[in-house]
Amino acid sequence: MSTSRAIRLDAGGGTVAAIGLHEVIEVVTEGEMAPVPMAPLHCRELLQWRDQWIPVFDLAAWHGLRLEPAGQFFVVVGYPADVGGVQYGCMRVPEFPKIVELSDQQACGLPDDAEWERIAISCFKGEGKTVPILSLRKVFQLHDRSCKTGAVDVAGAPIVG
Image (cartoon, rainbow, N blue to C red; front, side, top):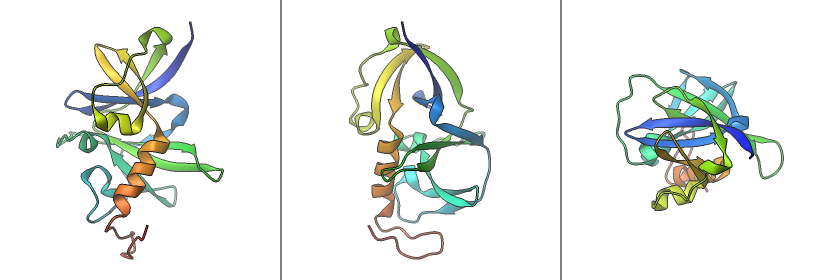
């Protein structure tokens, strides 16, 4: 039986997802934010992190939730870039992420939800919930496409793409 570790992201309202533990760089609770005007709710901000602006993916907003979190956490992630190196982004969640142990026996099909199919690569059952495992490449490619339409960069210049 093979096992692995993941980070469980609780977006509130019963919405949960996971990413690989190896994809997490750090968790931060604050930082300078810049709005992305006219972008969808799930990608309306950039976070300044280590002298660069990285996209913020709001998991609750992606799933149609409008929660007022008591706190917020930005899970800074890294994944392989198409041209080599590492791409960075972050996932906004209202609760501190939790490390979970996964086994092959927990694997299951994705929820019957077209939105999860767009960004998840697999799924597991844990703590009584079905938990989609996200593909960060899919999440942030979708983020890039969604957020460039009609958006401006942090300096106010139009983003064309």
